[in-house]
Image (cartoon, rainbow, N blue to C red; front, top):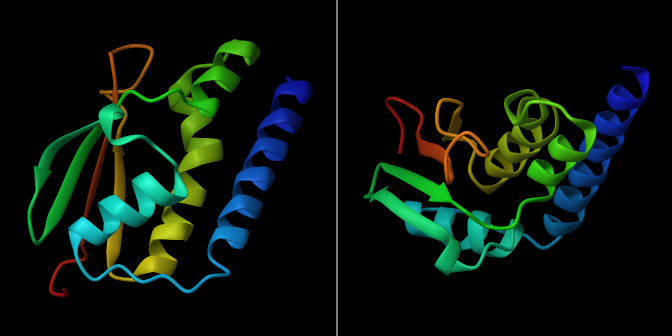
Length: 132
């Protein structure tokens, strides 16, 4: 398990570095459309053909992504559950980047709707209660 933990720590560090570098250019999200464009299409570099928008309004964004995913591939190579790998590698970095885009954003991943158990990964981003 030591090799797996080291691999996850290295992957998380690399993903954080990508986030730090990407954030060197000042970016701000003022709307959920900004979040879709900045976070999904620019930072995560997901082609819009791989993003199903379940809900997009002024208060929340729910997406289901079916893009080629390095986190999914890492989980498969290490023979680990993607739920665990995403919580360890992806989720902290996603929260960090979204917090820098706007500290009022809340990020949640639906671990009941995640690959390879289903066809896409579902995420929910919304404004912190009482704020917008």
